[in-house]
Length: 370
Image (cartoon, rainbow, N blue to C red; front, side, top):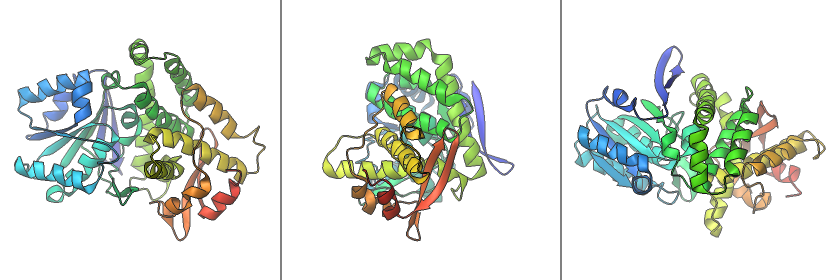
C-alpha cells in the first residue's frame, strides 16, 4: 500500500492511497464519525468489487444513494438531488460523503459536498482507469451548463482518494482505454521514463482483444499497472501541490482538453458517440500537430507522428471527425479563455510541454489543413 500526500505549502490537504485491495479502506473511514456513500448505479450493477463495498457499508451502517452518472446527468439538477438526499439523511457539517464511481461521479458528488452547508468533507473511490490516473485526483469538480463542459464548479480537495485496480477488472475495453489517453497525457507532461513503459503495457492490453482476456492481463501484470497508476498520481499530485488553483503550472494538465472538450461538445450536438478519453486522445494529437506547425517542423520529423503511432498501437483513436474551424465558437467559451485568447497546452517533446496563448483564429490558420 502506498500513500502520497497533496500539500499546500507545508500543510497536507489531501491523501492518495494506492492499494491492490480494500484492506486499507476501513482505517481511512475510521477517522470519520458519519459517512454517506453515493455510488454510480452502473458500478453497483456491474462491478463485482462494489458488492464488497456494499456489504462493508451495510455492516458499518453507512447510508447509500445511487445516481445515474453520465455527461447528460452531470448537471446542477443531479448536484441538487445529492444535496437533498444528504439533508434528508441528516448529514451535518462533520459528515463525510464518499463518491464511488468514475470522474463524473466525483465531479457531481465533490461539487455537492463543496456547497452543502457551505462545505462538508468528501472522499473518492474511483472505479474507472480515467478517474484513477486523473479525474479523481487534484480537487477539481465541475458540472456541465448550457451544453458547455464543466462551466460550473470549484476546486476543493477530498480528504482522500482510494485507488484500487480491482475496480477496473470489470470495465469494458472501451471504458478502460478511455483512461489510457489520460495516462499517456500525464507522462507526456512529465516523463521520468514512464511514457515508453506505459505504451508497452497498453500495447499488451490492446492485443488481448476481449474484456475477459484484458482482465486476465491486468491480474498477471498487476505490479506494473500499480506502478504506472502510482507514477501518474505522483506527477499530478506534485503539480497540484505547487499550483493548486491553476494559476500557472497546473494548466499543463489540460493537455488535449481544449480541443477535447470542443470535440465532446460537438459530438453531443451532432449525435456522435465519443467518450471523454477518446476526445482527449484526439485533442492531444491535435495539440501535437499545432506544436509542430508552430515550430514549422517537418511533419515526418515532428512529435505528432510519433504520438500517432504510439496511440494507435495502444488502441486509441487518432482521427478527429470534426474540422478545427467548427470548434472555434466552443473554444472561445472554454474556461481557459481570457482576453480574447485561449491557453493552449502544446507538447513539443515527451517531457516538454508548454502553455502558449493563441486566438482561435491563430489555431485555425496554423491547422488550416484541418
